[in-house]
Length: 112
Image 1 (cartoon, rainbow, N blue to C red):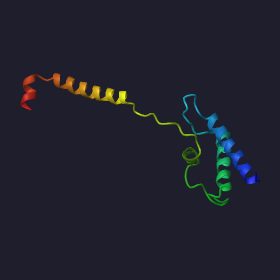
Image 2: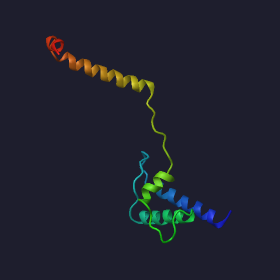
Image 3: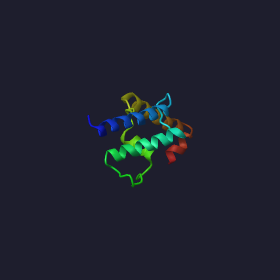
Image 4: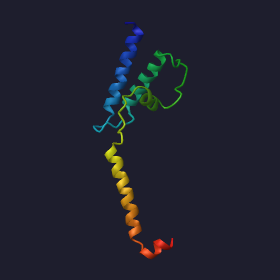
């Protein structure tokens, strides 16, 4: 294993440790602050340099936290709407429309 590959793996490990430290028990990521932010910024910039995406003289093209979440953070499966949930939404929609029509006297609805 080359030195660069080892350094990339070590840098990714450091970034994931920082991510884990700034994740709530519910799984919500929060932007690091203080020394975590300094370590995160340094490690993420180093990762981009090692991968050849930027040079030492370049500035980061966008927010490093957002870049990291988009490219390297673990993805959570998005909850899919089950058939039962879709039927419940349709039932609520039809019941709300029928309840709103029942609040008007019958003569007004037939006149519309």
